[in-house]
Image (cartoon, rainbow, N blue to C red):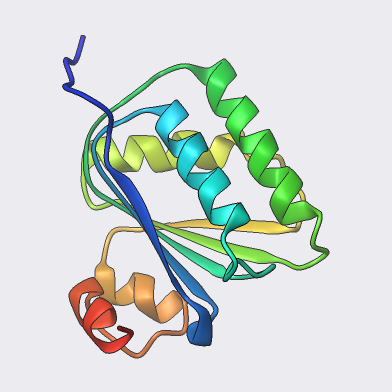
Length: 146
């Protein structure tokens, strides 16, 4: 069993002019923390239907394995994403075994809806290219889009 200390830091930054949201997970991935952060995003004044999602899982050190909670969280996300009538592209950056396991579990929990298009990438440049961004690294994106 993997030990963890305190809540996992998860943050998001909305790049309104690019129609992009950058979500960064670090540490032990707790579902309640993910749910709180998603609720804050959905209530944010710059939230827009169809914003592309870049989910950076590179810093994840462990994941909470509570599939009932995961499916409940995904159902809440689906309500937000499906209620807009617009497709949402979600790209998970998962360069480690732990982050890849997390991305795969999350993708499996999405019901095929056509409204959410989840993808997994292991390369920053390819992740950004899929999202239509000109930068080749997340650091460059964060610097350019301040």
